[in-house]
Length: 109
Image 1 (cartoon, rainbow, N blue to C red):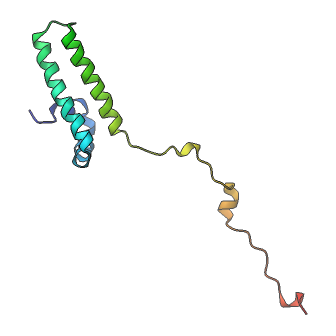
Image 2 (tube, rainbow, N blue to C red; image 1 turned 180 degrees about the horizontal axis):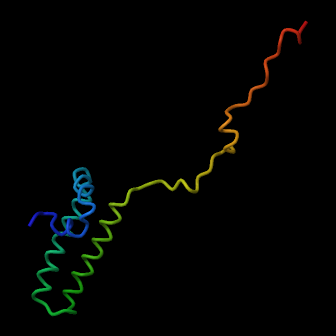
Image 3 (cartoon, rainbow, N blue to C red; image 1 turned 180 degrees about the vertical axis):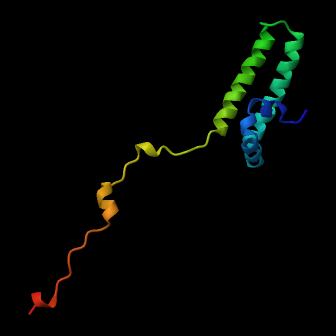
């Protein structure tokens, strides 16, 4: 069993991005490490405890919380540009600045 066995089992379609992000993100490495331990413990207690016991419920809850935290860390942080609006109307931005025609010598004797 690899160190990321349960993680790759849970998110196979994101395996590449998870491995890449873990290289630079110490917090994600920590969360995934905790997830692997919790999933391993849950698998063990499922074989030992009867369904519905408190210990089993606790580990199921821990695993769910860690999955939510991993999901949140994997979501790209994108600014919400849907609410931003330009300070000037787009029609004036597209045209650029407005210039007045140059005055000619005929206008000045």
